[in-house]
Amino acid sequence: MIERARVSLGMLKYLALDEADRMLDMGFEPQIRKIVEQMDMPPPGTRQTMLFSATFPDDIQRLASDFLSDYIFLAVGRVGSSTDLIVQKVELVQEMDKRSHLLDLLRSQRSNATPHSKHALTLVFVETKRGANELEHWLSRNGFPAIAMHGDKVQMEREQALRSFKSGATPILVATDVASRGLDIPHVAHVINFDMPKNIDDYVHRIGRTGRAGKCGLATAFFSDKNMPLAKSLTELMKESNQEVPSWLVQHAENHSAGGRVRHGGPDFGGYDFRKGTASSSNYNDTYAVPAIDGYHAAASVNAQPFLSSGNFYSDPSVKTGNVDYLYTDAAAAPYEYAYGYGSVIASGWD
Image (cartoon, rainbow, N blue to C red; front, side, top):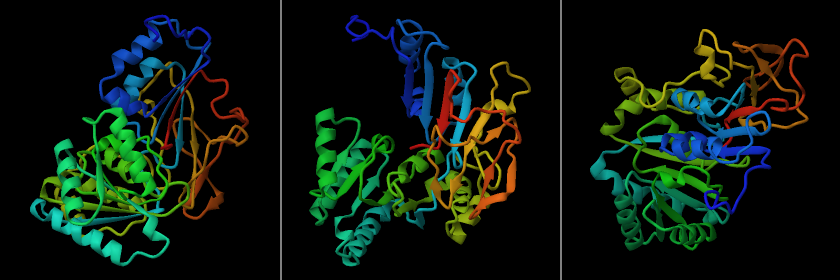
């Protein structure tokens, strides 16, 4: 539409990219760069650019910085972490036993269902599109109505699958990572990682489909020998979220190197801006950090006092809720509105 001059960006004031890290990671940099740099997009300073994601690994931050100038980094809670509203369970299941184990789990879930939980939905993540189709048919044959969603389905088929899932007509959705981001589906009570993802960031996005809007959720992971490189990162994530970590997983974590992304941040509060590791940067601005309160992520608000950090996080022991420190600034060094007056923003922790 833009190339055909059917849409003009000349009057645009705000450019927001949701799940920006995945867009760049999946190779959409040329398309984004063309829109930002070659079309009639107003230049930085005239427009405000905002990138949003629950995770922002260093390499993607560096790539994203090409589209930003003099930006600030906002973090809600710990970047790349999970809320303790989600109960995480990890079960050691070998590949050949996964289907029977899943069936036992679903049968137990059905037999223990209450009138309220009968309307709860279950989201099952698998690694491949073929695996999604096969598991959908196998579950349906065994008395558990399911529907699959993956990248080979056209948009109309995906929308139909989501409608069927949301309505409860097929209360089990079997999906690849196409469903791990950007979907806000009420009543998803249980996320099952039938196949574990290859890195910890994708795990965070997957389990984030439950435990939304203040509700509690359950996430169960089938962990096999092929997932051992994830052991250390998964153990760290579960400890951060106050989850019970199986002893066998701790042992494997000690024997294997960290899988996926390296985790950053202090013991009580995270929000890592990769520019902090740079000796000097003309584009380095301050980092605002928004605390998590008793497991709930505080929402960014233009009326809220920002918590400013210049290279370091400062915790005020006199202001504390639960186990989470608030961050403070010792001077009126920052405006009272988030991101106002800045041309660019990276915001992480929202999902």
